[in-house]
Length: 251
Image 1 (cartoon, rainbow, N blue to C red):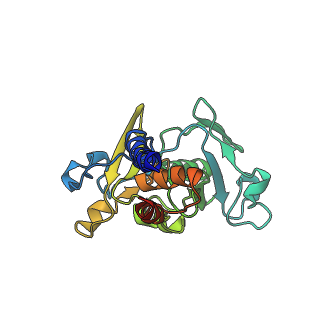
Image 2: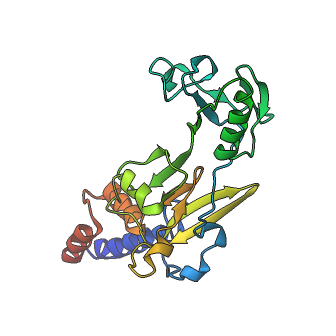
Image 3: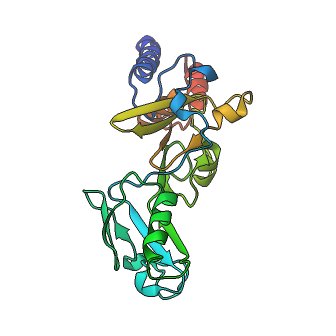
């Protein structure tokens, strides 16, 4: 019986130590969260002038009003609009697309507005006041970790906000560590990481940061999730509170 009394505390201590020392991107170590809004990388500040720039491997729809032969995945024509059947142009590794009657166009780094103006001008050489629309099909944001429905969300707008993405993922799971939500953004060859504390209501607009296509949102788990799992593998308890209560009675 004395040996049992010694084993249980040692087991608990070992599990707690392991839970605090083992970490990864989805499970944050204990410690004080960074609550400073001023500490946020300026790359994550609101930018009212932001525009998406076309990149290699983007999928582009071109719509020309009443000109189906010039349209690829047109939003205007019911017979030329289904993206499932490959109705889009892929930006190749050289940053080019092949446009009907225009041939090869370099579009990498262009904004949607700039490409629309270019196509309107080129089509306007033989069409009167052409109405041209452009759509990028693969503007996406990934939401991972402790949310109810982790997924890749396709955007129909230039940008959205952090809480909008959490809502699209059906909210947080029970073990979500909302004090240490991460947003990852690649700019050129550099990856920037924002650590956002969503447990506080102050400076709401600064914490509900704008998100752009290509961003990755990661909601880490609290350390208690790791400990719960470890305990459940050893004894048939489903929560740390339940395990602690029964262990207390046993001791």
